[in-house]
Each structure stands twice: as structure tokens, then as C-alpha cells.
Length: 41
Image (tube, rainbow, N blue to C red; front, side, top):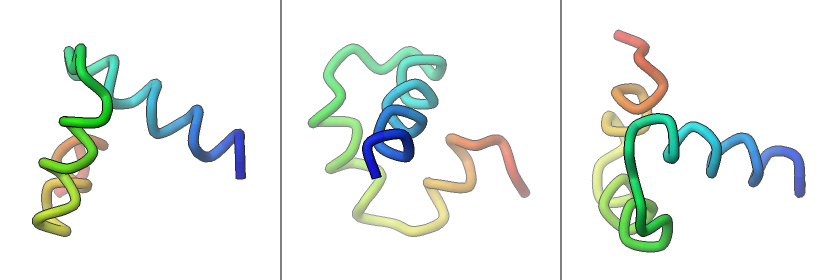
């Protein structure tokens, strides 16, 4: 679980997120945003 969490944090940092908690809240509001962060269609 820790490695998945670190992967998610790393992906958010690659997108330029400086506040991880705020970025997670923003993404969790819409499931399609996760795909956008991962650069998937």
C-alpha cells in the first residue's frame, strides 16, 4: 500500500502539484481526472 501511495504522490508531483492534499481532494471529486493525471485517454 505504501508503494502505491508513493506512486500516486510521485505522479502528482510530476504534474506540478505542490500541495499534495489539495491535489488529491481536487482529483477525488471526479474519477476522470485520475486518468488525466496519468495521461490516459
